[in-house]
Image (cartoon, rainbow, N blue to C red; front, side):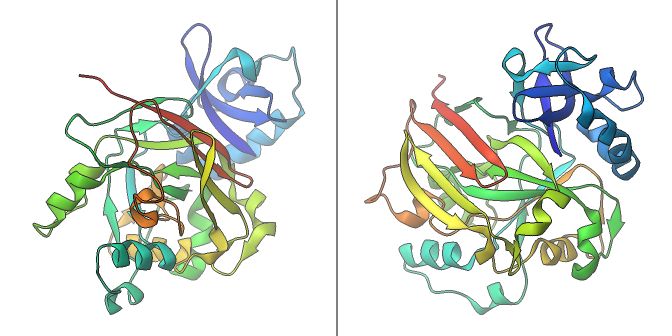
Length: 308
C-alpha cells in the first residue's frame, strides 16, 4: 500500500491510501472514524491499523472518503515525524565527497554506521517550494531513501529490525554546504547547514511491497536526480554498504525508537553536487527545479525560491 497525507479543497488535512495513482482514500472518513486521520496516530498502532486499511483497497470513485488525486494536494506523507536521523551509508558517496576535499577514507567509517540528527520540524512535501537560506551560496540536494519506524523498540538487533519498519519513501536532505563546511571545522555538525528543510514524498510504500526487490543489503531500485529536467545523478540502492537493519541497530542501542521516527540512508553515489563537483553542475539557485525519482517510491519534485 501507498500512504499519503493530503489537503482537501476545504483545507482539511488528512492521511490515507493512494489507489492506482489517481484515487486517494481518506482513511478516517472512509472508516467512520475507526482509523485515525493522520499518520502519526496511525503508526502508533500500525499493525492493527494496517489490517483495517486493507478494506479500503476495494473502494472506487463515488465511495465515501474517495477523492480523485487531481482534487487534493499531496503534502509530505509524514509531515510531523517524531525525529529524523540521517545516516551515511553509501560508500561511493563518502569516498567521492571526501576525495573532492582532498581527504582519504577513515577506517572508522567501516566499523560503525554513523548518523546525525536533522530538523524534524522543517519537513517539506512534493511540489513544495524550498526557501534558500539567505546566507547560503552553496545550496545542494541529496538523493536518499528513508525508512519509517512503525513499532517501538530498544536495543534492536539488525536481524530483527525488519519488524520495526513500516515503510519507505524518497528523502531529499537539502544542504547549505558553505554553512556546513564552516560549522564542521569546529568539530560539530552538520547542524545549521541542514536546519532549513528536508523533503519527503510523494508517498510511503509499505515494506511488503519492497520485499521482492531485495538485493544485497538494500533493494534493486534505480535512483535518479534531475535538475531543470536534465539527468545529473543515477545510482541504485542495492549498492548500500550498511543495511537499514544495521542502521536501526545502531540508532536503538541504549535508546528507544518510537513509531513515526525517520531513518535516512544518506546519499547514494553521485547523488549530490558536493560529490559530483561544481565543474559538473553549479550550486542550486532560485528558480531551479530538483526532481528525485526512485523505482516504486515515485517522484519527489521541489523548486528553489529566495525570500528576503
